[in-house]
Image (cartoon, rainbow, N blue to C red; front, top):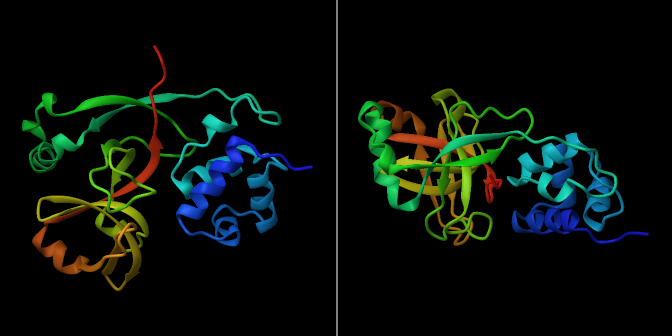
Length: 221
Protein backbone atom coordinates (compact mmCIF):
# COMPACT_ATOMS: atom_id res chain seq x y z
CA UNK A 1 0.00 0.00 0.00
CA UNK A 2 1.40 3.38 -1.01
CA UNK A 3 1.87 6.29 1.38
CA UNK A 4 2.93 9.82 0.62
CA UNK A 5 6.34 10.92 1.86
CA UNK A 6 8.01 14.37 1.88
CA UNK A 7 10.65 13.01 -0.47
CA UNK A 8 8.10 11.63 -2.93
CA UNK A 9 6.05 14.82 -2.91
CA UNK A 10 9.17 16.90 -3.56
CA UNK A 11 10.20 14.73 -6.50
CA UNK A 12 6.70 15.10 -7.92
CA UNK A 13 6.55 18.88 -7.49
CA UNK A 14 10.00 19.48 -9.01
CA UNK A 15 9.30 17.13 -11.93
CA UNK A 16 6.08 18.98 -12.73
CA UNK A 17 7.77 22.39 -12.36
CA UNK A 18 10.32 21.32 -14.97
CA UNK A 19 7.55 19.84 -17.15
CA UNK A 20 9.17 16.40 -17.20
CA UNK A 21 7.02 13.32 -17.65
CA UNK A 22 7.78 10.34 -15.44
CA UNK A 23 9.36 8.78 -18.52
CA UNK A 24 11.57 11.83 -19.09
CA UNK A 25 12.87 11.71 -15.53
CA UNK A 26 13.31 7.94 -15.67
CA UNK A 27 15.52 8.28 -18.75
CA UNK A 28 17.67 10.91 -17.04
CA UNK A 29 18.47 8.77 -14.01
CA UNK A 30 18.45 5.32 -15.62
CA UNK A 31 15.42 3.68 -14.01
CA UNK A 32 11.98 2.64 -15.25
CA UNK A 33 8.97 4.96 -15.43
CA UNK A 34 7.28 2.68 -12.89
CA UNK A 35 10.18 3.28 -10.47
CA UNK A 36 9.63 7.06 -10.66
CA UNK A 37 5.94 6.51 -9.96
CA UNK A 38 6.78 4.35 -6.94
CA UNK A 39 9.21 6.99 -5.60
CA UNK A 40 6.55 9.70 -5.92
CA UNK A 41 3.76 7.83 -4.16
CA UNK A 42 6.04 6.46 -1.45
CA UNK A 43 5.78 2.84 -2.47
CA UNK A 44 9.57 2.39 -2.65
CA UNK A 45 12.63 4.38 -1.60
CA UNK A 46 15.33 5.41 -4.11
CA UNK A 47 18.78 3.91 -3.60
CA UNK A 48 21.58 6.32 -2.70
CA UNK A 49 22.78 6.21 -6.33
CA UNK A 50 19.28 6.94 -7.69
CA UNK A 51 18.95 9.76 -5.19
CA UNK A 52 22.26 11.25 -6.35
CA UNK A 53 21.04 11.17 -9.95
CA UNK A 54 17.68 12.67 -8.93
CA UNK A 55 19.55 15.47 -7.16
CA UNK A 56 21.50 16.20 -10.34
CA UNK A 57 18.51 15.91 -12.70
CA UNK A 58 16.26 18.15 -10.58
CA UNK A 59 19.02 20.40 -9.15
CA UNK A 60 17.96 19.74 -5.59
CA UNK A 61 19.66 18.07 -2.61
CA UNK A 62 17.27 15.22 -1.81
CA UNK A 63 19.43 13.76 0.95
CA UNK A 64 17.74 16.13 3.44
CA UNK A 65 14.47 14.25 2.82
CA UNK A 66 16.07 10.83 2.55
CA UNK A 67 18.19 10.79 5.70
CA UNK A 68 16.54 9.00 8.60
CA UNK A 69 13.54 7.72 6.62
CA UNK A 70 12.60 4.02 6.76
CA UNK A 71 14.63 2.11 4.20
CA UNK A 72 17.43 4.68 4.00
CA UNK A 73 20.95 3.63 4.81
CA UNK A 74 22.93 5.62 7.33
CA UNK A 75 24.91 8.28 5.52
CA UNK A 76 27.63 10.62 6.69
CA UNK A 77 27.64 13.97 4.96
CA UNK A 78 30.60 16.14 4.14
CA UNK A 79 30.39 19.90 3.71
CA UNK A 80 32.52 22.38 1.81
CA UNK A 81 32.72 26.14 2.29
CA UNK A 82 32.16 28.05 -0.95
CA UNK A 83 32.19 31.74 -1.81
CA UNK A 84 28.71 33.27 -1.82
CA UNK A 85 27.86 36.15 -4.14
CA UNK A 86 24.64 37.99 -3.30
CA UNK A 87 22.52 40.02 -5.71
CA UNK A 88 24.11 43.22 -4.42
CA UNK A 89 27.57 42.04 -5.45
CA UNK A 90 26.97 41.06 -9.08
CA UNK A 91 29.16 43.81 -10.53
CA UNK A 92 31.92 43.09 -8.04
CA UNK A 93 31.75 39.43 -9.09
CA UNK A 94 32.15 40.41 -12.75
CA UNK A 95 35.09 42.71 -11.95
CA UNK A 96 36.68 39.88 -9.95
CA UNK A 97 36.51 37.60 -13.00
CA UNK A 98 38.23 40.24 -15.10
CA UNK A 99 40.89 41.03 -12.47
CA UNK A 100 41.05 38.31 -9.76
CA UNK A 101 44.10 39.80 -8.04
CA UNK A 102 42.23 43.00 -7.19
CA UNK A 103 38.97 41.36 -6.01
CA UNK A 104 37.86 42.74 -2.65
CA UNK A 105 37.04 40.22 0.13
CA UNK A 106 34.33 42.64 1.30
CA UNK A 107 32.32 41.91 -1.86
CA UNK A 108 31.49 38.31 -1.04
CA UNK A 109 30.62 36.04 1.85
CA UNK A 110 30.88 32.27 2.29
CA UNK A 111 28.44 29.45 2.94
CA UNK A 112 28.69 25.75 3.80
CA UNK A 113 27.31 23.43 1.14
CA UNK A 114 26.57 19.73 1.44
CA UNK A 115 28.77 17.75 -0.94
CA UNK A 116 26.88 15.44 -3.29
CA UNK A 117 28.70 12.30 -4.47
CA UNK A 118 30.79 12.52 -7.65
CA UNK A 119 30.39 16.30 -7.97
CA UNK A 120 33.46 18.52 -8.46
CA UNK A 121 33.44 21.61 -6.21
CA UNK A 122 37.02 22.80 -6.82
CA UNK A 123 36.06 25.92 -8.84
CA UNK A 124 32.43 26.22 -7.75
CA UNK A 125 30.75 29.08 -5.90
CA UNK A 126 27.22 29.98 -4.76
CA UNK A 127 25.17 32.64 -6.52
CA UNK A 128 21.97 34.31 -5.34
CA UNK A 129 19.32 34.39 -8.07
CA UNK A 130 18.11 37.86 -9.01
CA UNK A 131 14.73 38.39 -10.67
CA UNK A 132 11.83 36.11 -11.51
CA UNK A 133 12.65 35.21 -15.11
CA UNK A 134 13.42 31.59 -14.15
CA UNK A 135 10.65 31.08 -11.56
CA UNK A 136 9.30 28.84 -10.17
CA UNK A 137 12.32 26.53 -10.43
CA UNK A 138 14.87 29.30 -9.78
CA UNK A 139 13.00 32.03 -7.86
CA UNK A 140 14.37 35.40 -6.83
CA UNK A 141 16.62 35.06 -3.79
CA UNK A 142 17.30 31.33 -4.18
CA UNK A 143 20.89 30.12 -3.77
CA UNK A 144 22.50 27.75 -6.27
CA UNK A 145 25.94 26.27 -6.76
CA UNK A 146 27.49 27.44 -10.04
CA UNK A 147 30.64 26.55 -11.96
CA UNK A 148 32.27 28.06 -15.04
CA UNK A 149 32.06 26.21 -18.35
CA UNK A 150 35.06 25.96 -20.65
CA UNK A 151 34.63 26.95 -24.30
CA UNK A 152 34.55 23.25 -25.23
CA UNK A 153 31.83 22.53 -22.64
CA UNK A 154 29.69 25.34 -24.08
CA UNK A 155 29.35 23.36 -27.31
CA UNK A 156 27.36 20.65 -25.47
CA UNK A 157 25.64 22.63 -22.70
CA UNK A 158 21.90 22.27 -22.03
CA UNK A 159 19.67 23.16 -19.10
CA UNK A 160 19.67 26.11 -16.71
CA UNK A 161 22.73 28.37 -16.66
CA UNK A 162 23.96 31.76 -15.51
CA UNK A 163 25.30 33.97 -18.28
CA UNK A 164 27.51 37.04 -18.23
CA UNK A 165 26.75 38.87 -21.45
CA UNK A 166 28.22 42.32 -22.06
CA UNK A 167 28.99 42.57 -18.31
CA UNK A 168 25.40 41.76 -17.27
CA UNK A 169 24.28 38.63 -15.39
CA UNK A 170 21.18 36.81 -16.64
CA UNK A 171 19.69 33.40 -15.89
CA UNK A 172 18.25 31.37 -18.75
CA UNK A 173 17.69 27.79 -19.91
CA UNK A 174 19.56 26.45 -22.95
CA UNK A 175 16.80 24.69 -24.87
CA UNK A 176 18.77 24.17 -28.09
CA UNK A 177 22.51 23.99 -28.78
CA UNK A 178 23.35 23.41 -32.43
CA UNK A 179 26.45 24.32 -34.42
CA UNK A 180 27.58 26.93 -31.92
CA UNK A 181 24.21 28.68 -31.62
CA UNK A 182 22.40 28.61 -28.28
CA UNK A 183 18.65 29.18 -27.98
CA UNK A 184 17.97 30.61 -24.52
CA UNK A 185 14.57 30.71 -22.82
CA UNK A 186 13.16 32.28 -19.66
CA UNK A 187 11.12 29.66 -17.78
CA UNK A 188 8.64 32.21 -16.38
CA UNK A 189 7.84 34.17 -19.54
CA UNK A 190 8.89 31.91 -22.40
CA UNK A 191 10.97 34.77 -23.84
CA UNK A 192 13.70 33.46 -26.16
CA UNK A 193 16.85 34.79 -27.78
CA UNK A 194 19.88 33.38 -29.60
CA UNK A 195 23.60 33.54 -28.80
CA UNK A 196 26.25 32.63 -31.34
CA UNK A 197 29.13 31.18 -29.31
CA UNK A 198 31.62 31.58 -32.17
CA UNK A 199 30.97 35.33 -32.35
CA UNK A 200 31.27 35.68 -28.56
CA UNK A 201 34.56 33.75 -28.45
CA UNK A 202 36.24 36.32 -30.68
CA UNK A 203 34.87 39.18 -28.56
CA UNK A 204 35.60 37.43 -25.23
CA UNK A 205 32.51 39.01 -23.66
CA UNK A 206 30.57 35.85 -22.78
CA UNK A 207 30.89 33.59 -19.73
CA UNK A 208 28.53 30.68 -18.96
CA UNK A 209 28.12 29.00 -15.59
CA UNK A 210 26.24 25.75 -14.99
CA UNK A 211 23.65 25.97 -12.19
CA UNK A 212 23.92 22.93 -9.94
CA UNK A 213 22.35 21.98 -6.63
CA UNK A 214 20.10 24.23 -4.59
CA UNK A 215 21.66 25.48 -1.35
CA UNK A 216 19.63 25.60 1.84
CA UNK A 217 20.51 26.62 5.37
CA UNK A 218 24.09 25.68 6.32
CA UNK A 219 24.55 23.23 9.19
CA UNK A 220 24.52 24.60 12.70
CA UNK A 221 27.91 24.98 14.36
